[in-house]
Image 1 (spheres, rainbow, N blue to C red):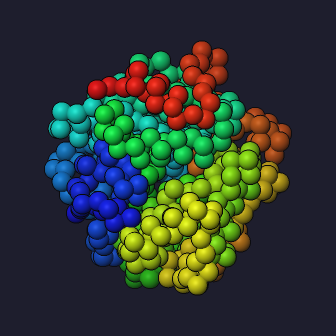
Image 2 (image 1 turned 180 degrees about the vertical axis):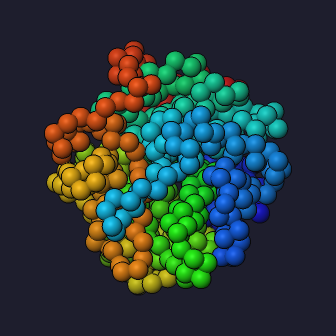
Image 3 (image 1 turned 135 degrees about the vertical axis):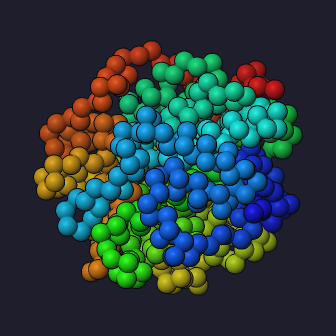
Amino acid sequence: MKFISTRGGMDPAPFSETLIEGLAPDGGLTVPEHLPTVSLAEIESWRDLRYPELATEVISRFATDIPRAELARMCAAAYDSEKFVSPEIVPLTPIGETITLVGLSEGPTLAFKDMAMQFLGEALEYVLTQHERTLNILGATSGDTGSAAEYALRGKDGVSVFMLSPQGRMSAFQRAQMYSLTEPNIHNIAIDGVFDDCQNLVKELSGDLEFKRAHHLGTVNSINLGRITAQVVYYFWAWLRATDALGAEARSTQHISVTVPSGNFGNILSGHFARRMGVPIRRLVLAANENNVLDDFFRTGIYRPRSAAQTHATSSPSMDISKASNLERFIFDLVGGDGTALAGLWQLLDTEGSFDLTAERDRFADEFGIVSGTSTHEDRVSTIRSVHAETGIIIDPHTADGVKVAREYLEPGVPMLVLETAKPTKFPDIVEEAIGERPALPPHLGGLLDLPQYVTEMPDSAAELRNFISERALL
């Protein structure tokens, strides 16, 4: 299995190299030359596997250059039951008769990003050791990516982390998780701007090949294909668990639909990959918040990202993104893997601020199964309140966006699953608004908000960021 760039300017490379490089040398994103496929019979043969074992099976289809025994060791370490609250790692929980939550927030930072980051931390340390290299991770976070990356990589040999976050745009809990870490290989930088400004800085420095190579830069944002492949696993797991109670004949024809709260399009892209690989998914339902550029695109075919000034600060802050990096990987599939055509669209995006694919709009749902919807603050409050009243379960605002939009796409005979995004503990204000009480902190995090915080505030300046990294990078 080799990987290429969406823009056509990269020689095929193995999985290990894509982990270290992150962004492709031509500015594109890495994708498999050919996506692996798995028969339904083979998926059925995995039904009794534990989560680490299933992860080994799925990721091995991509990481063909890593010895199977090493990959199994990494997955066992990443998905160790001591790191996750649920012994299943990813439990499925019905909320009423029609919708089931896929519990992706059982890990150390209480967010779904742990599912990929815990694997990526193990894989990066292995690859760097094998190649006797160091890596300086440059990332951007709108909330949960940063803490998940830092918790996965703190203290790892040969790795430093430089994590950008939008100043004042994350919850107090999210800031405390990141900024309270004291490991010397962790550097938090609060940028005066929004997430898209942070993401643009990452892309600018990653696109400067001379600086990137001189300072050994890599990424752990969802532009890193290692995260996408690790997230594919839980779509296989979700179908297997959702059909456990069915007989063999019924399972052979049972599809599920999955709703995904979406900001940077990475999580739902993993579902797109899983569907193409063979998981019986009828619909992938994209749930946006008020920053609904992606919903607009999938409804109209016109992709028009907003400026930083037009990006709303919402009560589901991890989705406050107006330019979704991973959409490029989906468009690459849409244009038949034509790197020249894709590069042309992104040139239009740079010069005109948008591109028009209305001629392809029907294919989004008919061929790729993707539909979408938008949720507002009022929707989130109402959904948190109704789920709690009906089931006693408290959900976070991003998951509430998902549940609200999922309710619009229910179909008889098709189980609807919603990917849980984070624990409600991370967003106490909106939970209190919805149900009149603040969610309790887990006992092991009781003193988190009182810890000293360490963060460098910085203007939206590539020059200042270069200087900061140059002074602290591992070489």
